[in-house]
Image (tube, rainbow, N blue to C red):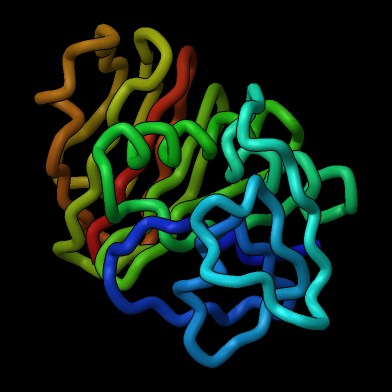
Length: 198
């Protein structure tokens, strides 16, 4: 099942289109015209608990972030296709933690992407991934958690065939360009963030 997960990053306007909405604490403050199905977190960022919405409250001193708690709840309740909003605004350490939510979800058997009005971010590990794009879209593929070995690519201006990147070598994966409406990349080893600028 599919769900939206709204975080508290103040990145500007975004439209949540999914039917089921999970707010991680202060993500509730960012919803304009929609009512979430559930709010999860320690409630330190929310401006007043709403009436008639399910709330799962956790203590402030905890080992997981509100976003991680929300993903755990989602997976346990059958939501394994997650679209994350509100992940890119605010403090840089929060943004880095929010990016890691993509791998956190993957480890728990869920597919997740970060979505905003200007960029989508995905996490892929060993295997093949496909991406719909417009020609001339910028697409960056950045190693995460270690080195990465690409086996091939299709639909990109700069081929990734048999390309190996070390954990801190990002230049060769940065700012590639879609030359087709369908992009395909094979990852033989490791994991990457795919940043798709729309």
